[in-house]
Image 1 (cartoon, helix red, strand yellow):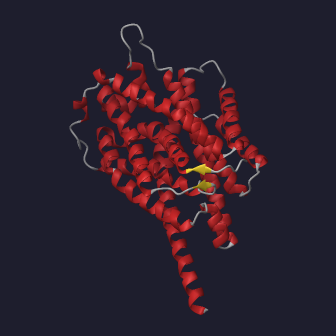
Image 2 (cartoon, rainbow, N blue to C red):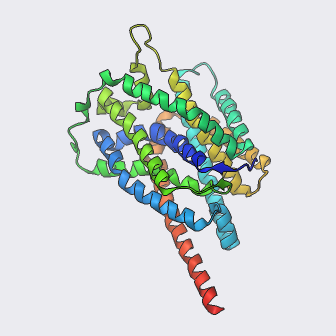
Image 3 (tube, rainbow, N blue to C red):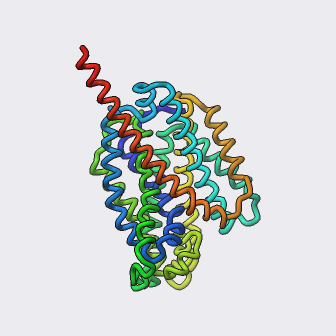
Length: 363
């Protein structure tokens, strides 16, 4: 894989597209099912834990001293710690790619690939993602840089264009079913927003430094692109109907019209969706390959990982059970995993610092 240097702006853009996909697509229907009308308020209040999380991620980034997380673990701790963390992170990124690809197949089947077998969609899209993963992080970041303006433009288009269809009174009243859903919604929102910690795996070839203020702005932007379609979906469809939709953000496209004669613009959602999925899958498998082999050239490792991804995505799994899996298992486990990983990393950092202090005092 290519090891060309990347800049801080590349990492910010990768976060917006990769994490933006999960907060804009995967998490919305789950949030509506958990917190219902209060879900938009849960996202607003997630700003507090997300900001704290970014501060912790940035603290670890500074302690890595221009290394990525895997290189740091390999050079600073015993082999068994390095291997354990590498195996866990590799599985995590592989599962992330699988969830994204499987959900994309469901959406494509519902919208425009009804007459195509699922394996055709899986293989073709995986091949495109594989090419990007093989070419390396700079190629993935460049593609993200090229598609982001269009993704944002289409997002503002559907958001502003649907203004006449919105009734913001439907966002109220709040807490009709108590406060439990609201607090659970904060947890589900954080499960996707906490993926900001991906930056710890992207700094190996970084030229320059990441800035805390820009990371916080990226975090706030991700909260915004979660809040926007969520509040819009409730305002347009009502909390009950929006909760029944599998992809509320993309159902909003079907309401958009330009004048009297242009009434079907939902084809633009194809570009939005596939752009986010493409970046997320190729980046996740690139990171899985790097974590697994820790070498600059590992095409066979990537090929093996993509083979497992394709096989897993082709296994029959009905959409209703899949959404249930996301709600009951994937997001809660993802949140616990990320918090546990953060605590372990902070502990390892403290152990390393204390080891250096003891070594210095014995000289």
